[in-house]
Length: 159
Image: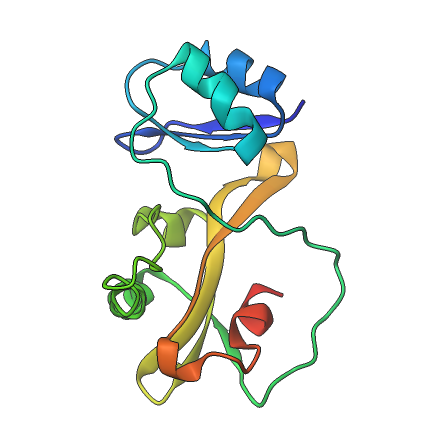
């Protein structure tokens, strides 16, 4: 069963697929852990660890197909774009929709793309982690500003 553990942040981040990989990964970490697991694995996690602040998230699978291109241009984001990303993600804080696992270092360490309209970043997608040596990545931090939704911008930034 696949699993990745990232220890570059104050809290270890665990991505796991399947209950067995969760148990194995939990045995490899100490202290607080931010878990990204499928819902059916949550009960197993609760048997082995204290679970606090569970939140549901959407799981998506990348098929490699290219979505229809909206009238937008994506830009590879870098460290200088972090303030724009933070402003974009702040759009969803009051509704609880902003990404809950974003660290500015993820932009430099991973791959992020965004769509600007003028000086405002209106959609972005990136990686929670990128493990080049493993040939794996976890796509995340996908967000579109509320007033620009329904136009395929997040799908375009993700592709």
